[in-house]
Image 1 (cartoon, protein in one colour):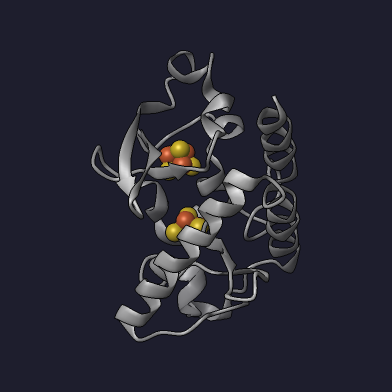
Image 2: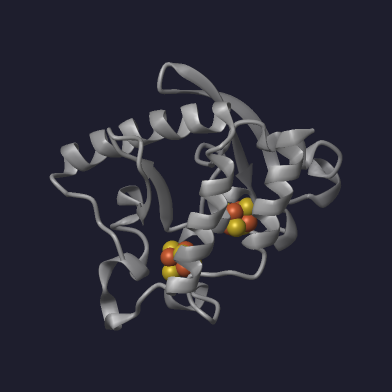
Length: 176
Ligand code: SF4
Ligand code: SF4
């Protein structure tokens, strides 16, 4: 029940908060919604509770499946490239930002290094900048969510994956 309450709050905060004050999909023909059946977005721990009754009704998702991630199992949702915005998962709501917890346990919101070559908002083309209000709202969401032990544990694992990715691609932490 607690998770449902905090995810509802998180969804509400990010319902109208977006990277730009217009639809950034027009810059790139919605690149981040062009997944296929094999790709998908991670559901954060317990987030599936938000889809308990609405999943197939909404026709937003193809499936929610368990996959391996960081020596544990997480749920991934795959979609048709179109969805009911009110039901989009947290991963979609925060893209192209991501929470990162450093070795000192400090939470930051950074540009997702995995999106660096996909999202025009991170390549600096046309000097378009992500809204500071969006970043503030994403931070607010993860300050709330990281108080939950399962979610915090997951965020620490995710941060390890992000560090690996940055090491592999020779990039550093990229903030706004
Ligand atoms: S890839 Fe970036 S610019 Fe394109 S729709 Fe997604 S968030 Fe917006
Ligand atoms: S669920 Fe919606 S926002 Fe997320 S990738 Fe699919 S179409 Fe895009």
